[in-house]
Structure formats: C-alpha cells, structure tokens
Length: 580
Picture 1: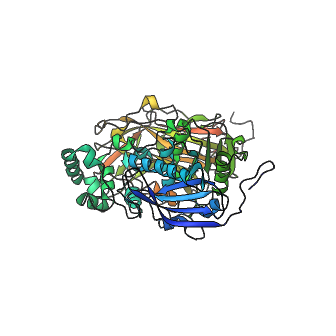
Picture 2: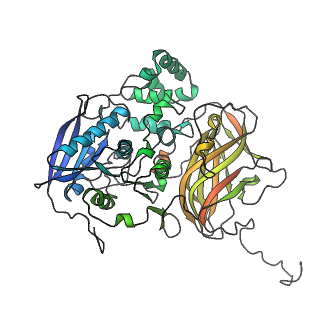
Picture 3: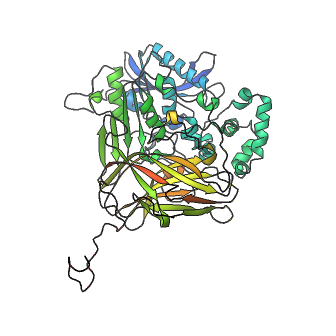
C-alpha cells in the first residue's frame, strides 16, 4: 500500500512457522504459541495476539466468509501478511486454554500479567528489534487494552478495534439484564478450558453457598436449562465461569478487576467497531475513545462484522505499525482521528476531530397516543399505552413512529429514551430498539438499549445530557402500580434517513423479534421474567416520555403530522380564495 508521499513495508519475505512454542511466565506456567517469522537474517518488530480459542482456527488456509458461530473465533488476522512484510507475528493461547498450562481466570489479573511477560519474552528474542505491537479483534482486542493499561516498555502500538471495555455493561449485563445466550454460547468456544472460579475464593465458602442456593431457587434463571445445568454442576468444564457471572448480578469487584484501566493507557492505539455491534463491542469502543489520552484513532465501519478469518484491517494496521515500530511515516497521523461510515442514503463517510460530532443536536421526539412519535408537545389527557408481558400468552410491546420525513435526516450518536411507566410486577425489564421504517412499511433495526427497572438509579457524576449512565450497584424497589421514571440509553448509531422513511422506537419487556442480522441476534437472548405482567407507558404533560435523537444534519423544520404532502383544494372551490 502506498500514497503519493509514503509507502508501507513491501511484501518481500518468505515465512518460517514455529508451532507449539512454549513461553514461560513468572510462576513457571508455560503458554503455547504459534510464531510466524520472516525467512531472513536480521531483527524485526513483533506483533502479538492472545486468545482463548482453538489455535489452528487462527491461521486456517480458508477463503474468508461472513462470521458465523463455527468460525467466529478466527480473530487473529493473517500472520502470513505481517511476516511477509517484515514482522514477527506471535499468536498465544491464554493460560488454562488450548495447550497452555495453568488455570483460566476469565481475563483476570493473572492473564494480564502473563501478557506482559510474553511481551518481555518477545522483546528479548534474537530475531526481535525489541519493539512489540498488538493486533486482533474481540478477545484479542480486550486483552490488548488490558495489557496496554500496564504500559510495558516494549509495547509500542496497539491496533485493537471491536473490543468491549466494561465486562458488566457491554458483555454480560445489558442495562443490568443478563445476556444469557451470549454467556452460554461464548463459553462453549473456549478451547479445552480449565477454569478456576472467582466467587468461591473471593466471596468465601459460606457466601458462595448462600448465593448458589439462591440462584437455584430463582425461577427466571432455572427456566433456562443450560443455566440450571451449570448451577447443578458448578465445578464442571466452563461452568465456574458461568456461575461467577450469575453470582455477580451487580457491578462490583469481579467486574472491576477485569475492566481495562482506560485512563492509564499511554500506548498509541486504534479503536473502532461497526455500527451493527451495538450489543457487544461498540459502546466500549466509544468509552475507550472518551477516556484514552494516548495518540488514538477511531474507525466505525458499516454495520457488518468482519469476515473470518479477519483480514479487512490488515493494510490500515500496517500503516499504524510501520509508523510506531519502524519509524516509517505513512501519513496515518495526518488523517482525521475520527472516521465514521454513515449507513443509509449514499453510504458515505464522515470525518471529525472529536466525538460526539460537534454539530450534533439532540431533538426531542415525544411518545404520543396511537403510536405517534413527534416533536409536538403533549395534548391534554393523552393517557398511556400498554402491553402485556406474558409467557403464557404474549410477550408484547408497543411502537411509536414519526410521520414520513420530508428532509434527509442524519442521525449520529447515542440516543436516550426517557419513560414514565408502571407495571403490575415488582420488576420491569425494558428493551428499547430504534428502527428505520421504509415507505413500504418494511423495517430494520439500528440500535438497542436495555434497563432493569430496579437498577434505574442514574450515576449523575458519570453522565452527560446525551449519555445517561447507571450505577448498577444497588436495587431500588419497584412498587406495582406506581409510576416510575426510567432513562434508557441506546448504543450509539448512525443512519441517513431519506425523505419518505420514518423513525420508530419500540418498547417491550423481551427481545424476541425475528427481524435483523446475525449481529442483531448477538444483542438478543436475555434472561426474561417468568412472572406475567401488564406494563403501561404514560405520555402526557405530567409524564413527558420522550426520545432524544442525535441529529447532525437535516430535520431543521421538523416532521409534519400531515405527512408533508400538500392538501389538495376541495372540489368545486376556487383555489386560494374560498375557505380562507
């Protein structure tokens, strides 16, 4: 790859592959690695990736395909690409997975210590210049951010998009609601995992047994067979990990010791994701952009996850690594730091120096009777709209939709839905989704937000007007029949609505829609209530339920309840005279 004033490292080397290399770490455990080196004399910078999956999957000679369940863990990138261009690429199994020794701690501090030790080991090798970068998505990305927060001296650059940064909020408890399908399906992908559970050691035997008994009596949890099975055999296979997640339903020490300290990162880093990854990686990448002060880039692409094996970011990462590991100025730092693809319309890119975009204005769209979503204030006595959440009959929901837009309207950023709601239950699960509705009434989801009603307490110190954060540290009772206020933040999104399309927000207490892509399914599969309930969303002047939408262009005048279509003159009347 080259421009008019720069060129990246050329493709010039053969490749030496060393498999099953044993790398010792501080406590004597050995981690297994596959190492790909240029077939040449001399020293080269290294690129490291650490994972917990099948090692053969990371370098399979396969034509890339869309991500599916079986190929999802092929996240390392192409090691031959880097080796042919003068880099050593090391792909290492985390302890307790694959053929690495020791016991897996689910991204715990010991795993991070191991990563730092591997970087030091690479830097000492006779074929290494002493400089190391880290690359990879998802698991690889999360580990890279954890290690970058330690700032080991040999780590010079990280290219790590698609990585959640808060294990509680981004991965396992969306809005305080357990993402149970992702938990159980992801844990099955861990290669030969040997897990040491956190809860038994850190909670103590008495508290561990108390929580285990409580979980075994929880009707919402035991209604899911795979969770009930894990609780029945809590020490088997990956079950200690599943039990740890179930035993820590509030934000606390288990999650904090795994979350990367983003403010501590001094290593240059590239962040990003795709708009379709709102149920896992996307919110964490924007959080990292906000908190990391090191040299950084943010790239958010079309709502399509990367093909497997991952190859799409190879050239971009080479420019980044060439700059920081080979002193080759590829011009990358001269380009805008924030690059966002804008779906819809003509599918263009937006470049910016900051996030959120400086031109963003959050418009209020109020929830009205009869499913209307409009900027118009409330009419008197509008009342409420209700749905039932009943596993015996219907898990319902309600939707509110704007009139057809008359202007191209670009929505870019996080949105917040403020709801005033009452329920017959003593708990309320809120599932909020934002949709594009086409003129033919077909629709597709853009993003989602979630909130467990009893965890509605807002962390004002951590919040902004456009991004409401919750503490998730203590339950606040819900009184059946009483109206409570809920603020649900939807993951950032981007879309260029064209004239004739409509904006729709949907509210329910489950995520059972069948529309959407594989990425949308990743954001579903939550733990649902077994207790039937009736839910009412109030929308009147005393209970102003509203959606705050981030608009960067268009909708300057607003939507038209008339639909934006001029009304024809009544038959038999002179145009422009009678009736005025």
